[in-house]
Structures are given as C-alpha cells and as structure tokens.
Length: 335
Image (tube, rainbow, N blue to C red; front, side, top):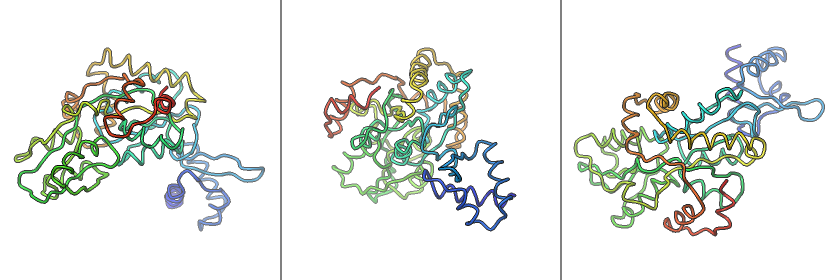
C-alpha cells in the first residue's frame, strides 16, 4: 500500500485545486480497483484527502490542503518563514480551543504564491505583506483584510567583502519596496528568492552584495563580520504595517462569527502577551526556519506588534508606496 499511497499523493498534488476524478485514478494507476479504494478510504479517514460527489456516479478527490473551498472544522493558515507571525499563530491556536476547529499551517516560499492560494480558496487565512494583499486584491474581491500583524523586523544589509552590485530580495513584498532606493541610487541588479534561509547563506558566502531580509534571518546575518546595515524598516514609516491578515471571502461568508473571534483574539492576545503564551507559534516557526526557540524569542524584539489597521492607514500606505487606490476600493478590502 505504501507505493500506491505515495503515487496517489504525488498525483493529487500535481492536480492542485482542480483535484482528480476518482475514475481517473483507477485508470491512471496500475493497481487493482479494490486496492485504490482501500487506500483512498485510509487517506480520507486520516484527513489527508477529501472526496466530493459529482453527479450521481462520480467523485472528485483533492488533497485536503488544496481543496478550493472551506472545509467545516478546519482552518488552513498560510504563512511565510517569519518570526513576525509567532504571536498571531499562538493567538489563533488559543482562540480555537474548545471550538471543534483544527488548525493546519502551510508555509510558503513567496508572498504571491500564498495570496494566490488564498484567492483560490485553498486557504482560509493568509498572513503576508500588506502590499501583497492589496496588490493582488485590486483585480478581484476574493479576500478581506481583518487585521494588521506588526511592523519592523527587516533591513537591507550589505556584505563589505563583495562588490557585484547584486541585491537579493523577495518578490512583490515589503522587502521589494525597501529595495527600491538601492536600485535607484546604485543601479543594483535584483535577484528574487523564495527561500530566505538559502538566500541568507548565499549572501554570507558572497553571492550578493546586498540583501533585503527579515527576522529571524536578519539577526543571524547581521552578527557576521563585514555585514553592515544599509537601511531598516524603522526608517521606512510608510512600510507600516509590514504584514496583515487576510481571510478568504467564502470563509468570511460561511464562518463570519469565527472570523471575528480570530480577529478579537489577536487583539486581546497582544494586550497581555507573555513568553509562555508563544509556545505554539514558536514551534511552528522553529520547524519552518530551523532556528531554536531562544533565537526566535530574541528576534521578536525587532518588531512592534499591533493589530490596528483602518481605511486611513491603508490609504496612506498605498499613496506612500506609489500606488494610490481609491478609498472606495480599499474599503471593500477591509472587514
């Protein structure tokens, strides 16, 4: 059963939100019909796949994490590899206690991929740069921003041992915004990365002269000899809030009260946040980044956490980054 299980999961992953008709599985894989049915049933019991009937005699199969719609009792949260999200992850874990809801966290390499998944409804919640949320929402109405996360915790660094004018940064993100002045002033050539840990290692090894990076990778890189700070997010007031929390519209429509519980829960969590309360978020980010809990707790000191985000703040943010958006359109993006 092991080989069939692996082949099934690979095939379903390749199909994404479109899923796969169960009859196609029978014909595509060289296993008996009973063997396939038994394996599908096992995966379904484990919550790994989801099956929905199509018509009278057919079913479609998805990986649970790729099903394009809300699944009752499950909240799928998309994040990037950042310690900024530790408090929110811990707060949502606490908010879901006793509510018969499971949390499934997916870690993405890029903000555009995360927001695309949110807009495909394969996530209930997406935590990503405010800029990416708004940019991708200009052409559709697939999400609503319910809260800010925080600000700070990022900087543009230079490696004094390198002179190649290459700048490593992430795409369509706060880091990309922070990098604009360096590109304008020095004509730096941009290299986009999707793995901040790998980019940090390559930067320290001399592949790039500059790097726009966030915590916990920032503190790690900054502690090496010859690494200097070109600018930090504290100097860029227009970057506040750095990141925001968005929910898919179908999740809001089907679980509106739960969304409000999550939003209120984060606000209340920040008001009385203490180190022991952060265990869940620390565990998730430690697994994603490879940094230990002590390093992550230390990196949190680089941030100012606040859930506050209103129309005036969002409008100013977009004007300051050079993409004015009408108040009416921005209002539609906010809870």
